[in-house]
Image (cartoon, rainbow, N blue to C red; front, side, top):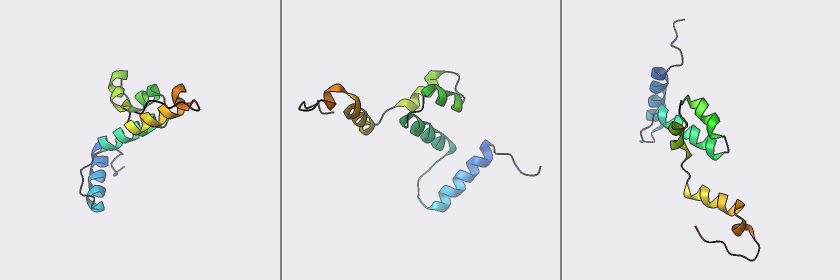
Length: 95
């Protein structure tokens, strides 16, 4: 009962403590971890509507910022799925 619940204030202080102790010399925050987790989930194939629900967003537009695709990921998906990229003897357009 005397312990603080897992809340934003406690979690933020822990993140700052461990970032300082790590010596990486870069800022970070709980929001950065939240953003990274959502981005990695989407890149791993999670449905954007599930990520929306997990993040507690009312609008899908609020979750949309996490759907930005890295150029490397785009090239990999193109190479794996585009018919022109997988036809033998046909060179696909470079990205």
